[in-house]
Length: 123
Image 1: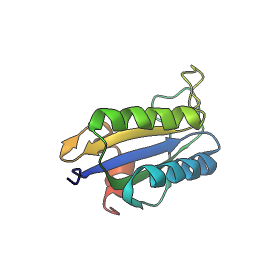
Image 2: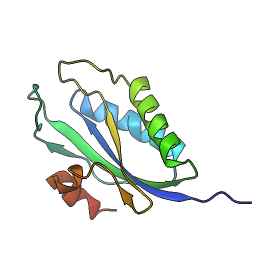
Image 3: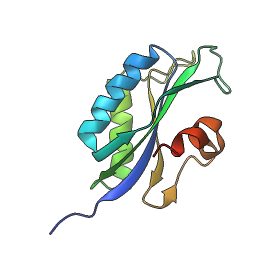
């Protein structure tokens, strides 16, 4: 029996060595998901950050047979593998947020951010 495929939207962001971190994250997501599509990447000013470096943001859509909880755990594992720590100095090597799983939206405040509104039309 074929497993059900779930459609997801993931937000990618980095504020240090941005291009390299997003490239590494795209590689990981391409291996994790099927029928993957990425938007262009755009720089945005930091929100509520002690650091002044801009973020590089991008959206990704794809399908997966993973359940929502397991997918979230895998995304956190990818973040750790690519250098994300729980430090307090504002460095975000990579942030991968599950914005949507099938028709269920998450990180609702992010949907109001201009970069999400601007990039979502590319998907």
